[in-house]
Length: 117
Image (tube, rainbow, N blue to C red; front, side, top):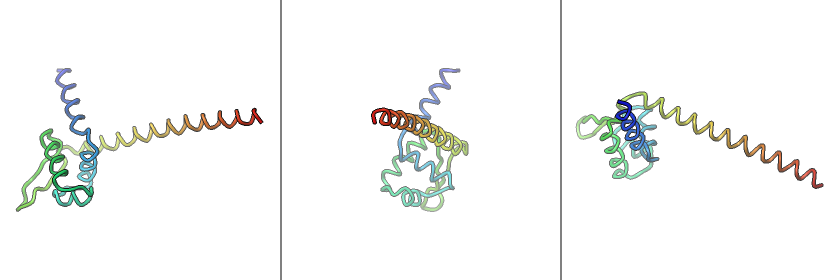
């Protein structure tokens, strides 16, 4: 069972491993949208958006519902929103760590300059 879960997680994260797919998920976190609406918000051409949506659909991350001549996309699981928020928090933590290291380096560099003078 653990191996199946690990494979699921690996496949799931592979499906998320593209900046445009992440952006599409962020847009869908705000509400259901058609391909044209997604395309307009992300500023990418329709074929690229459609291709990425197809990958997300294949992995069961988004679902498409036909409404007239449009397909409306929605997140399959609202926990995707939480996952994106956690990823953002991890990114911010990395930034904080980097800034802290740079500040320490800057303080060390300044004190070295003072001792030279």
